[in-house]
Length: 105
Image 1 (tube, rainbow, N blue to C red):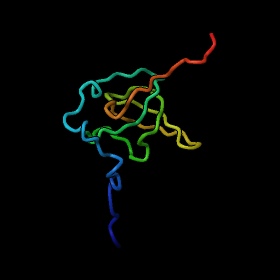
Image 2: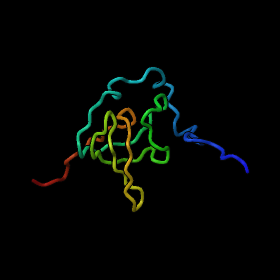
Image 3: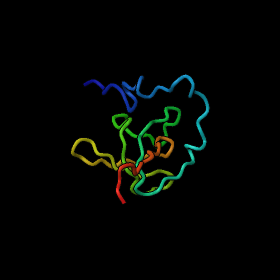
Image 4: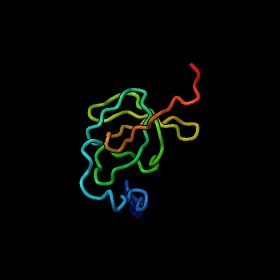
């Protein structure tokens, strides 16, 4: 029998590539950011840090913070009709600013 080819980051050359202007040291504010429960976040991987990275299938998706687990966060992401739960380090998360435009009070 043959061995299985590839691993966690297989076929992610363009997905996990940084822009030339953002290469270098990791931004410490994103590393230490704090999120609240029910915050909307987008999953954007930081390729320089592998700790707490999600599976590359979820790159670019958005979800909601459910709770904090250690230094990571539990994120619920809708993929089609299914609800997936991911445990992600905050360096791979970007907070989405929600607007209340058009909402009547």
